[in-house]
Length: 239
Image (cartoon, rainbow, N blue to C red; front, side):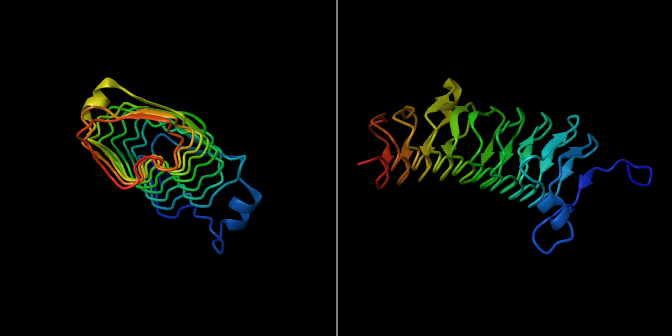
């Protein structure tokens, strides 16, 4: 509450803590134990918490009021955990990129958009990732180098797995698609599963007509099945 009115937005660079900024020595070097975002907040702005917090920092979002997490909102932050409430519908590009201590990603069940590299290089994220049916826009390289991620449940009805989506996810070994998701998929773009060395088998759904260059290159594939009529790009599979 500010001047008797509820605060609805955390503005651009509100708690930005990069080197040379006032909060750097307090928030980043000494560490903050917890951050609580009240239920009145609907938007977290660009760079709002970039470089903020340390390995012991937990972020708690109260209620379901939050709708949008802006570009670079938590970029390169040191915190280890955050709960994303069900109300979140938009996660903009690089929102959580380089959050190396983040141990879990819960994608909200009604999210519609996840921007480019939103979770790039979140190397401590492990366990299962679920992409919901409501997702209509997935950017490029969204989960690149999430090197501890083991399982993905692809329930979204997107027509393509975007460029570099799971590139470098070396621990990924279980990729499950729902039947409606399989029916909707038309293409796997370049580098989508590049260097996913944990994947040893993959069945490309029957409606897919394009498999991009290097999409499974340097993966652990030993067995792959794909439609005979699909266009296959340069070095799409291991040689």
